[in-house]
Length: 551
Ligand code: NAD
Image: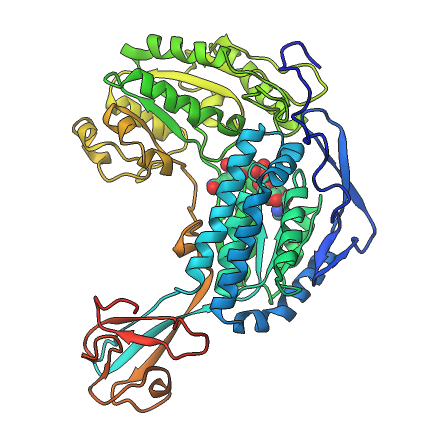
């Protein structure tokens, strides 16, 4: 092992590959199976380049079999009472939490992040199961008067049908549960395709879903090194009803183009080029803490990672000094060795890309203040690095680094900061300044979003260090991670005000209005209202007056 890496024995138990002896085949229709052509691929530990195991390598035929299974299971799963779906998700949460170490070890083994980060990912992943278990029984609808004033438009949610879920390698468990849990809550069946670098954690999680009693075919997992072939087959299949993708913008564009002919529903979480901005009145200690978190979580391999640091000229030197000190103290090493702060990059390609970006930045005038080089193997390590005086037109500012490199450039005033931020990937409407900052850049007042975590960091905002969020995330209108992410169709029905027709079955409608069950007031047809799923499976839904919530 290279001298510059943390040395030590793996933390006890971590040398055992968690998924060893487990399910390294595809999961289709509740059965473990090999790929139709019998091929397999290697999964490596990025810290040692050791082959951990081999996994079935699906092709288009296997993808179609996965979709067959999802379609076959679809009607029954959609008809399963939402309470039962909710309880399965909750059981998955209850089983996952005590196994946090098993899953963390699996993540670290195949992806490389330090065990502490991996444990945090498992907690984050588990939260999606709990949250969507709660959402499953509360998928709302609404009714409004129709434009002619004599009928009602009723909007109800229905499962969209089989979904194709494509996840990246950087959060192999959290990105899977973030997609699976809302789909299952809504009553959709799925084909999950994990990234080829990190299939083991998804397979381990699929085992857990089988254990909690998820019916066969509801979740199907296809692992593959042929993602283009698998995706093309599924996206062309008219039975597929939705694509949910998290990954790079380039691949996202390709998939959107493939989804376009069928106008397939899509939820896309793509890459960005987030700047972290430090103004001259910032509390520099707080700004440095925020900057280190923003850059080095997951070794910089996070979609939310700050990609470039814009620092006002007056504080550039003290901020840089503190960052350099902190970065120099980071310990680089295998994720399963105690004391490691930053693990390996995910593969050799990532090391080559970052090395190339750093070299080009230096050729374009940047100074290397810490790190700057790949570490000799085995393992895909790159030194935690600080680049200062990066030229505004340097490639490293425009490209996503996705690694442990702090790229510093300075600005003169707010307008200059906004100009730099926008130049490299943040577009108008995607910046938001603290109101105090608006004077300098009034045209940006209503712009954009901050990273979620920063929204909970009023200290950073107040103190003048403010990070702007992702440029391209959710650009296609998909939503992830909250109630809005539940993949449901909205079905509009026009109902007659006089109560005739099938609305009387669903709503107990009466001439001139209907009764709100909890408060017994009559809702006039002209008033908008809402319905909630009944708490009893199979019961009629309640209509309630506005403000009269679920009993
Ligand atoms: P990637 O786009 O290379 O791969 C993502 C997924 O797409 C993988 O499952 C991969 O197998 C699949 N894929 C690759 N090529 C494909 C093709 N031609 N056709 C169909 N599928 C294909 O991204 P990655 O390197 O795995 O992940 C890192 C990227 O993900 C970064 O850009 C990061 O910003 C982004 N990301 C975004 C979020 C977010 O919330 N916006 C979260 C995590 C990661």
